Length: 194
Image (cartoon, rainbow, N blue to C red; front, side):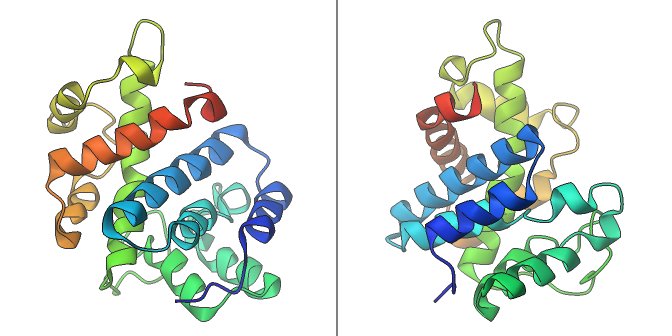
């Protein structure tokens, strides 16, 4: 597994292509959960973090034309020197998604692909859980309440439960995955304003 880009280069790409603070927070959240998953599995935390950080590198450019989402990412990442491996993993988070106009027929097959799709989707449920707290802080969110909110399909309805449950394909039970994700975001709460 080689990415072709280091953390500094990944940060530079985010600063160049991401202007919306909400998108930037989402990338930082995804990076944090991917690092936590890498630590859990004994994988390379830096590399998994970079994958999380760059997965939506084209979102600010494509959010008004989502059929281009992940297509533009390929162009951006190739021009920056990213490896085919990094590009493939980034693109894989859009497999089968209505938000992406391409790769509808592809499926995720590797641990890092499942981890990325589940992690980046989980960020929405965790952040929404913080936003309904009286102080809007992650510190008040508990794993048990996060699980209840996850089971309520009307809560954070745009977050695909099916994709989050791909955590099971990498050997994590849902409650364990939620706890890892919540702890990861609580540890960066200052960076993301929660």
